[in-house]
Length: 257
Image (tube, rainbow, N blue to C red; front, top):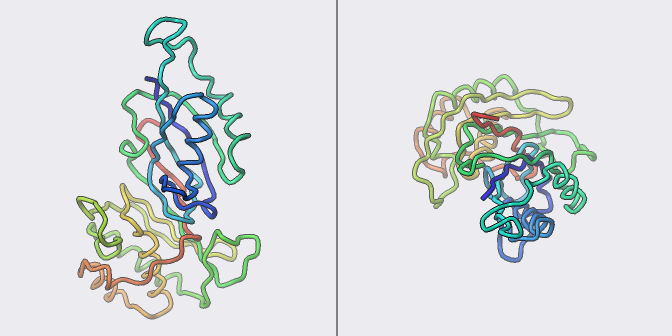
């Protein structure tokens, strides 16, 4: 078996998330079908994460394994290594324009796009203005939040590890412990952008954290109230989950990449 990593990006607006679902368009299914067509064998792709419906990724990794062709070079052999450059070119011509392949490269047979990742960074974009050229890539709000206060609240998050209050209920995870290493709000043009980096994230965590921090920024929640929410370890105590359209996976980090 030969294993390869794919470096890609996608606009998630037209997809029901990354993971394949019956009779629904997903990024994983679209990519697998294109690879299977070009490589003339059934290809299964494993992603570095499972973005939800409508969520975007400007930096995403996946891996697949290529089954050796036993002939004519002999049983269990491959005549030629995969031409990664040509495959990138062909994929970008075959895939829809909202998916872009940056690179494909060989890795060790035990390399894993999901489990080998050591950190991920997400960004959430909001604006109080109508931005016609950013439709589907930000969430419009109807107030001007206090950026300094939201950054004070964002720093409070770094003091905690258990984010049960921001996790989607009834998911099959063994722990709700996450090690945050960066949380910050910045003003970028007409938008406010929340950046958060961690070794792992829980389902819906970034969107519910963002909604709660915006409650602080609009004066609906105090800093001490934020601490109470975190320490309650109860999803019902936290703020609303923001819409998927404003969320981007912007960086996935590996120890050897």
